[in-house]
Length: 179
Image 1 (cartoon, one colour):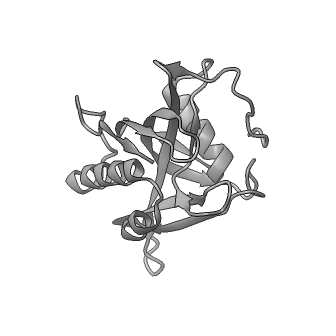
Image 2 (image 1 turned 180 degrees about the horizontal axis):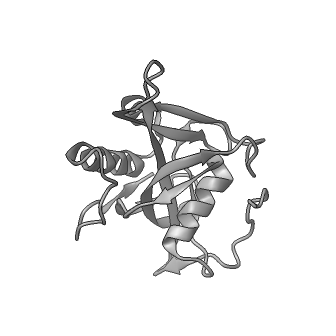
Image 3 (image 1 turned 90 degrees about the vertical axis):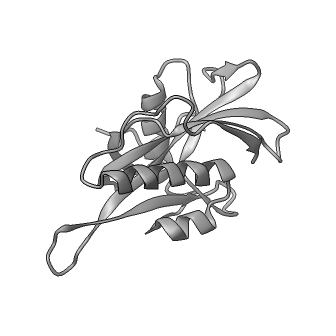
């Protein structure tokens, strides 16, 4: 059974040295050849609209004190995109500043190999979701750090397309900047 309500409030929100900690996923699947019914090697990714509907991004949100990074990533992806799957090794950690809230953030992204797409999900009335090619996602994604994470995922998938991405290597995917 899946809860169809998003968590709200910040009372469980994690902070590290004043930085709000956020976590999310890059949901992906392999395209299926319509003629053969077999998976192809080319992956496609799922993006969602921002809450205000002004652009596309990967599902993400606050990491709360009662959950692991992976649990938070999975929860946020379910709430915002309505998909379930396997959360794989982290893509990295990024530090950035919000342009709109004048706040500092520490963000983590994970690949999520999608196993199920739900017809109903908590934020279905405030967000749209769309499957697209990696190239399209890179063009429409709002945040530089999410684009970097997507590049890391693509490199992992290309290096061993039949195997899931491996664990984060030391120092990989750590960047700083502004959202």
